[in-house]
Image (cartoon, rainbow, N blue to C red; front, side, top):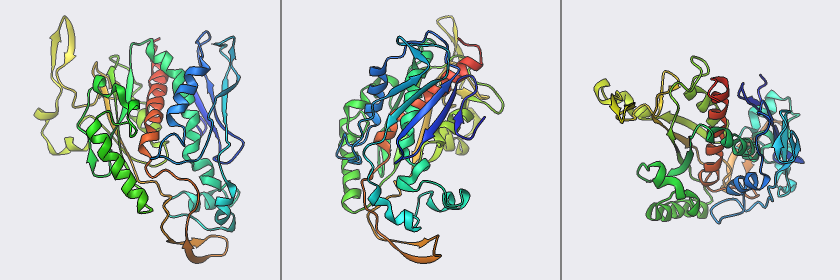
Length: 359
């Protein structure tokens, strides 16, 4: 398995750079006869596309999918599916500092320069840009059809931005998230979060937050312990999103300060079926689904591209200096990351379903 791939039953291979000709994805292992609707994929891409809101970057990208192989007359053929999105909105002149050797604090510029011996594409972060997540979304849009056959729905929503935190929402309560600018489906908290983002932007700064993902009940036994457990595979996928710094399931870190009698999800017979009475485990036990909904939280750091002067170094000349960034950057990564989290969740669930023989 390559370092740019995810999954084993269904494999996603990500490719492209921020300012290259395209970003895209190769998906191998899709069953033949799966309907592929480009309009539906484009609807997903529209949800993460830049320039659609005053609280996101104003970089203009059309973000229309172009499928190059693996689909014939609207259905998968069983061959590898290759899909791309063209890059059009990047301005190379904003990254002259990178060509000169100046590295941005908080970005991967310095370790990338060392690892790839200076041959990496530094424009817009290159391979380390959130721009590559367009490919994740394409793969997730297709995978959602596979997961739909299991009767599982996945929804992500903005739980927190900066100091503003929304209460935990049910699947039904979270469903209208895309009707709100911050993707927090609660009018009061959405307004407060917008202010939090705007205050940071006016200060030439950025702000982070938390996305929560919730699903309908997962199939019992979904997951491949021990090294491909459901939560470890989901965590790997989430950490492939730039700016993600933390992942927790169910009670997460708060489980460390309560007792087992408070954390255990006890069972009962409900309408003739075995059901957990609570979901402190977040839908996963022993790396497998146990009949409860998935419940996870993904923490995003503030975007590293800020408009304040910062001290840094030039790796080519080995000298110190001050860097002042130009360009178009998100003041907060969270709103545009909601569909990315959903897409990766669907992809991992589809891969687990294929590997576990659930389809």
